[in-house]
Length: 424
Ligand code: SF4
Image (tube, rainbow, N blue to C red):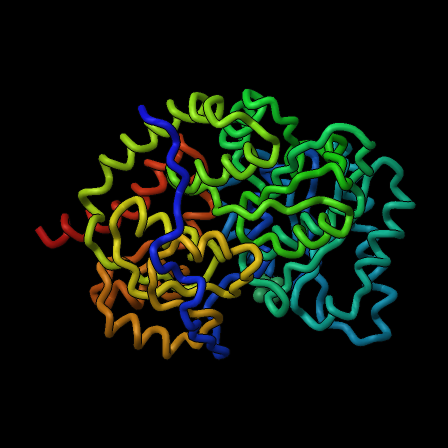
């Protein structure tokens, strides 16, 4: 296998493409959804949603099929009450937390997760977290908001990790270390850890699998984001001195190589060493993608805004699988984080925010071969004869890195195969 050829910007990428900005009705999950993957990642944490019955239903529906042991999340239901009832609500919350910690002594970190109902908004969860940390020595109580008013789907993870940043120890002066931020499936994290360590890079991950292993941060920290939705976390880490490395996200063979290369360059890893270490993974990823490519090459895909993964996914589908992008929508376009991706994405229609009716009209007019969208839009689009892929699956499934490149591509070939089978 030849030397690594760095991923290059498309001749005229999407950097300067005009963005269609829409502000209308949105069809996205709220940030509570992040609990589904965060509770599996941080193994001694518990997520207590302070919310309504709707929040409890959402969590059960989103996570119900994935719970194998006693879950590490729950909802403290705060019923409607007037302002005079707030003192009671605080006492009730304290009682719930006390019962929980007595029953689950293994919990080391407790997240109070805020939600939308007005009764919850009136509660001061910052003060409650401070009060409860003082009361339950040994358990760190933190808070963040997963409210649908403030957050979409993946922003819950951003809010959770940003809440962790002030509790990270200060990094002592010394050699630089790499901090990879973003909850990755353990298997993916282990693969990346092995590669970075083989390059001689001292790497740490946020979040850590255990509360006590929270990495340190400081001016010697070089920050690499694993997910595009971590803008608040990145800002909080930068405020503590970390230097953010601009890079595409590690999707596909080329995206993964460019992501790893950004870290390797920052740490002065010799190019030959980098090429030798990444060659086997790149080869496996190429072979896996070659198997999926015939089903996707030349097909058109439309991506509705949902997880903020849309731009990196579109780049992957276009540059590695030959798909044509009809439209790529994203809830927010954070140019500082998305710049390297936009430079690689072939020119296409790019939209930010959502006015769902207008976007549906464009999609129906485009008649793409495949539409990536949230659960709420999938059935109506299928009923109109369009093949869909649920975007939530792309967040719940390990898709980053060389070994997962084929699985990622297969997530897009499956709906097309199903359509062909039904048509046969
Ligand atoms: S946080 Fe808000 S949007 Fe999310 S489930 Fe609860 S009430 Fe619904």
